[in-house]
Length: 129
Ligand code: 5GP
Image 1 (cartoon, rainbow, N blue to C red):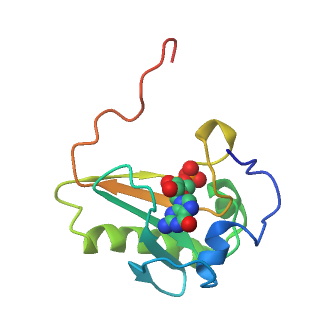
Image 2: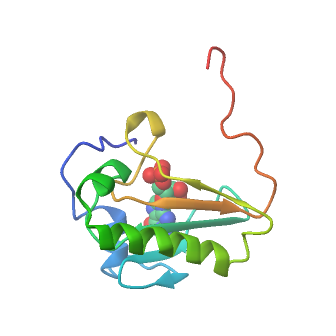
């Protein structure tokens, strides 16, 4: 179910539990600012999630409240994960869903790194969109 990204941070969300080690995940990258792990239901041959260590509901919340150091650390971590996975030359797509229209499901900011094949147009086309 899509979440309301204007709600306060809920520390019982799935990714908070993954950060605390209460739900297992396979580490792809881990530093002071960010943690990366494979998506459990991949939409592409490579589908990695990168999440900030801090408690931020969405990109909106993060960009408004996070410190410059957290923002720099997180953005650099996303780039590092993509480079380390060899995705720069073939290319990759970043998605950060925020709120109901985006279909955000987990209320802890996450950037999807999607790659491994030609991904096609940005969105499925709908009439009138
Ligand atoms: P959203 O729709 O919020 O942008 O994306 C949430 C993503 O989290 C989905 O792609 C979903 O497959 C992934 N996900 C949900 N629960 C888990 C989990 O327990 N482990 C992992 N690795 N991914 C999860």
